[in-house]
Structure formats: structure tokens, C-alpha cells
Length: 428
Image 1 (tube, rainbow, N blue to C red):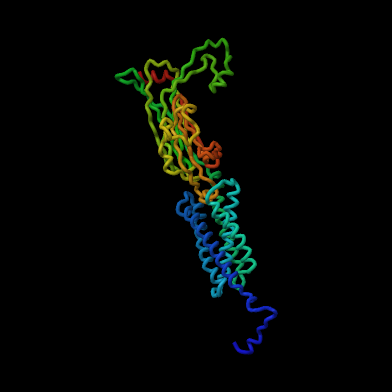
Image 2: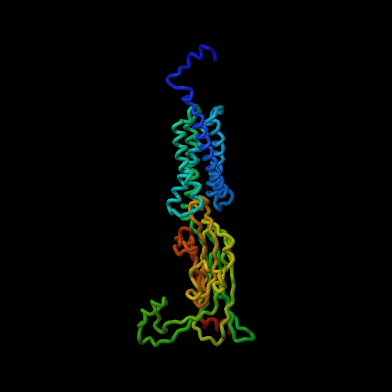
């Protein structure tokens, strides 16, 4: 610097400690900005990689890849922080910081907004809650500093960031909300009696029953539970003189009113499962199960009735872990304590239970853990009851169930009847 240049510097009532650089403040800002960008990047990479490489739908995979790429962009922005608050050798360092902060503000605002819908405790809130506060501060800093100055086309770059955010948000809305309601699963279940035969050695009829389960739609399904029941029906003969006098009793018993027959009685002959809990069926696949019902030749049944149903979960709504495949028995000490349904009150039952991982990991990090629960009750009133629920404050299964339509839980029924006279005629 020449003497002439030194003359251009003028000190006006301040000393050297008043130099506008403020190195300590600048370094502190760079450290906090870089740490926040790295923390946000790690969170986005974790969320994005879970969906990008593990989601069950294409839309969720796209959202995952966008989150993953956004996390990598934030790591690049963290590297640019040191240059921007340093010697500024890279022309685009300020713009990179702006992009990284914008991504953080958009993503963490989304995560907090989703969390506010339920406001449930999850350890993940200790990541995106502080990062939202940091992103608000970081946005204030980059606006105050106007970090985009000196870089070409800052508006176009900002528009690209917003467009990417809109694509990610659109894919999330499509995979988490629109698709499950726009495309319904289509599963058919049919039961059919076969040709009865008479046992050559014992006075017993063998009556075959075939159950056919087919996925004829475009959505894969997971079986939560199934059951079938075969009853023998009897009733007392009536003369018809009283007319349909017992309509009220029939209605209360959920049966048809008949003029020449009294209130029917049903005896459970056989019960079992149509398909095992945890089985899954892709579109175009199915299963056929055949069972043989044994009925004594001397039985005084009027007809044989078979009823069954299958309860299923949309596979694109979430993944049930493998613990669901292993049954727990109410009569085995301690195996079903997590359910507040003691055998003395509920009778004997089999419990199937597993953790549910939502198909979109964004929901996993904004909700507490959900569990898929299926109870298979045994005995005369055999049936299967399935639902999705978190645990309550006592660590037991909560009876604050999630709505079935949220996860696409549906029960498909079937049933058919064969007169016992037809059994006699066909077998003899």
C-alpha cells in the first residue's frame, strides 16, 4: 500500500477495536450455521434413504430420493459456510448457503406441521423441533446478509428449490393420502360345498368345503386374520296357525322369520382358519383351501351352513414386522399380558401382534409407534378381530383404535348353505 493509498483511510472517533469485521461473531455464526446444516442433512438423509431404498410404492420412493438429494445439498451448503463467512473465494458459496437454509426451513416446517396433527411423543421431535428453531434463525441471517448478492441467476435457483419441494410434497400427499383412497383393493372370497360321500366303514358323511381367495385388484394385501365356521341347523316344526308371531324374537336373534319353523338352533361342527395371519397376496394371486366336514349319518340337521371371513390390510399402507407371524396363546402364562383381555372374561384366544412401519418414513418420525393386533377367539363363537393401535400409558394395547379406512383394513365375508337332504341323496 502506497502512502497515497493510506491517506484514503480515515479513522473517525474509533480505534482499531471498532473495525467492522468482528471476527469472533463471524466465526460463531459460521459454526452455528454449519452445525445446523449438517444436523439437518443427516436427518434428511436418514429419512430419505429409508424411503428411497425401502418404500413399497414408487411415489414414496421418489419422495425418499428427493429427501436424500436435499440432504446431500445441505452437506454441500455446510461446506460453503466456511467460505462465505471466510475469504469468499467461491462465487456461489452464499447462494449454496441460501439453498441449504431454504431446504431446512421447508422440511422442518413440514415435519412439525405433521407432528401437530396428533401431537404424540416420539424421540424424533428432539431432532426436527430444535432444527426448526435453528432454520428460522438461519433464514433471518441469510436474508439480513443477502447471501445471494454477487451470484448469477439467484431467482432461478430459488425457483428450482421450491419446485423440488413441491414435487416432494406432492409425492408425499399422493402416496400417503390420495392413492389409498383412489385405488381400492379388490379381494374375493367364496365358499362352496362339494359332493358328499358316505364313509365305507363308519356311518359318517364326508362333506368337502372349498374356500377360494383371490386378489383381483391392483393393490397387494396382507392377511391379518381369517376364520370359517360350519354349523348344523335345526328347528322345531310349526303348524303355521300362529302366523309370524315371533318376529321380534327372530329380529333379536338376527335370523329370518319362518311360518312353519321355530327359532333355529345352530351347532358348531367345525371351525378353523382360511389362511394364516401374515400371508400376503399380490394382484393376480390367490389361494384355495379344502376341508372335509364329518357329519354322522344319524344327525337330524335340516341344513349345513358355512360362514367365513378374511380381514386384510393394504400392503401399500405399511409393513408389519415378522413378530406378527408368531402366535401368543392366552392360556400360556404371560404371553398375552400386553392385551387387557384376561381369559376369564374373553375366553381362550390367540394373539398376533407386530409393529407397523408406515410406508412413508415421514409419518414414522412424526407419530408414535403403532401396532397391528389380531385376536382370534376360540370356541363356539370363534371369530377374528383385527385393529391398529398404539400402546397406552400403562404399556398395554390401547383401545383407542385407528379408523379402519386410514390403513385400508377390510373384512371380506362369505357363506353358503346346503340342505341336509341333499347330503343324504348325494351320498347314498
